[in-house]
Image 1 (cartoon, one colour):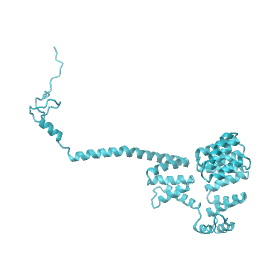
Image 2 (cartoon, rainbow, N blue to C red):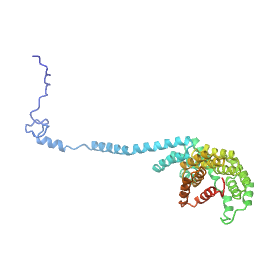
Image 3 (cartoon, one colour):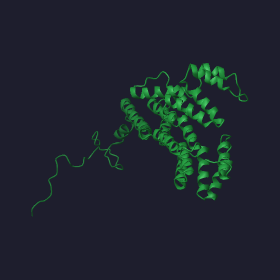
Image 4 (cartoon, rainbow, N blue to C red):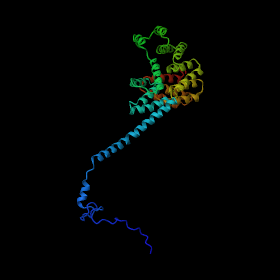
Length: 347
C-alpha cells in the first residue's frame, strides 16, 4: 500500500525533558515542558525598562488619539461648515458653527476671525467687539481676510460717537432732548460722521418727519451703502410713505447682504401685507421667526400676519407669548402689533 503520510520532520519528536535546560524533572501539569526552576525563571524574568517605557508611551498615544482625533475632527468639521455658510451669506448659521469651535478652542485664530465677520453681519456687535479685542496683536496671515476685518472694524466705529461728539452728548441726559443744532453744527464740520447722521435721522423720524429722516438716511447710505441700520429704517420709512416697491427693495438689499437677517424678512412681510399680498406676507413673517424667534419685531409681525390671514387663534397665541416675556424691549413691538390688530394703527 502506498504510504500517503508525510515523513516526520527531523527534530519534531516531542522532547523528553525541560525544553530550556533538558532536565527530566518536568512539571507535567503544564502544557509547556519546563522544570520548576526554569518556569520560575521565566515568570520572574524582568521586562527591560526600555520596553516598558515604549509600551507605556504607545498606550498614552493611543489614549490621547482616542480623545483628541475625534475632537479635532469635529472642530474642523464645524469650522468648514461655518465657512460654507459664510460663503452663502447665511451668517446666523455660520456664527453658530464658529461659536462651537471657539467654545472648545478659544485661541483658534481662524475661527475667531470668521466669528467676528459673522457677528458683524448679524448685528451682534457685543460679540463682534469682544472677538476683535481678543485678536489684538495677532497676525492675520490671510491678506483678504485681514482687509475684510479692517473694513468691518472701521464701519462698526461709525455706530458709536467719536470722542468729540461723545463729550457734547454727555451734557444731556435722557430727560433732556439733544437740540438739533448739536447735530447740524457737528455735521457741518464732519458731514460724513455715521453716528451723527444716524442719530439725527432717528430724532427726525421720532417726530414723524419722514421726509427729513429719509434725506439724512440717504446721506448715510452715500457714506456706507450697506449700513444695516440705515437700510432697515429706509425700508420702514418707504413703507410708511406708501413707497412699497422701494420698501421691498431695501428689504431685499439687506437679505442680499445676509440671507439670514430675520428682521429683513419681517419688514418685507409688513410691506407685502400692506400690498394686500396676505399669503406672501404670512410666509415672510413665519420665515423671520424661524430664523430668529428672539427678535420681538419678528414675532409681532407674525401676530399681525396671522390676524390678517384670519388665523386669530394663532395670532392670539403669539401675542400671549410676547406678553409673557420679561424683556422691556418687547413692549413697543407688542403694543404696535396690538394697535394694528385693533385698527388703532396701520402698517
